[in-house]
Image 1: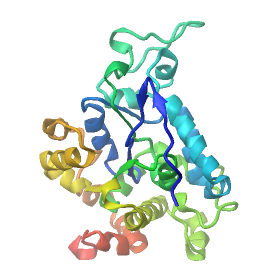
Image 2 (image 1 turned 45 degrees about the vertical axis):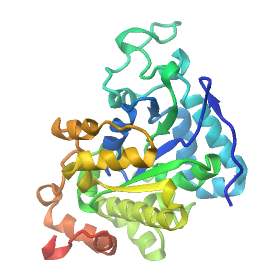
Image 3 (image 1 turned 90 degrees about the horizontal axis):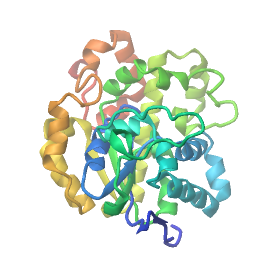
Length: 320
C-alpha cells in the first residue's frame, strides 16, 4: 500500500505529479530528459549528489529501503526537496551532465571562499518564478521505483526500453559503467540476489567472477528490463509510460505528442526531432551493435538475455 500524500513545497511551488525517467544504463533516457527539461515550466535534474547517495544505497542494498519502510520514502523525499531548489547553493552542486541537458556550458569553478555565481551564462538552468512541475532523470532510478512511488504517490514514471545489444555495446565503451564491476564495488558477497548487477540465482552468481564484461553488462540490462516488466504489472496505466528507444529515434514527433498527452504539458514536438537530427541520440544509435560487438560478445549477450530480447520484440540469432 502506498503512503499517504505528502505536501512538499520547493521554491514556493507545491510538488505535484513529479516525473521520473527510468531506464537501464545507455537506454536513451537522457534523450527524453533533454526534451522534458526544455519544456515550459519544468525543472528537471539529474545526478544531484544527495539524490545519488540515497538511490545508490537503495539500489545496491535493497534491504535498507525494506527495513526503513516509510522512513525510506521520507529520506528520498528530503533528498529531492534539496535537489530541486533553484539557488546558488543548490545549483553549485549541479553536475555538468545536468547543465548540459539544458544546453548550458559547464559551471566554472568558484573562487576560494566565494559561492558559485548565480547570474550570467553560467547561472541556474531554471527560473524559479516559472516553475510548475519537477522531474529527475538520475542514473539507475529503476532500482528505487517502489520508494519513489511511496515518496510521491502521484508520481508519473517514464521508462525507456532499448535493444540490450546496443546497450551492452555502449556500456563496454563507458568506463563509469565498467567501474561497477571492479571487485571492490561488486557487493555480491553481501547482497544476493542482487538486482543492481542482475544476479538472480546461483548460476549467475557462480559465473560472475570469471564472466566477460559483455556478460556482466548483459546481466545488468536483463535485470533492469525485468524490473521494468514488474513495474508495468504493478503501476496504474496513468502513472507509467513506456517508450521504446527505437521508436523515439524513428518517430520523435509522435513520441513527443504522446509524452505531452501523458504528462499533460506541452513538450515541443520539435524538441525531440531536433535532438535526433543534431545527433544527440544515444551513442552508437539503433543497431550499431552489429559493428561494435564481436560475434562472441553478441552471442554472450543473447545467451544471457535472449528471452528478454525476444519478449520485447527484438530478433536474435541469425534474425538479429
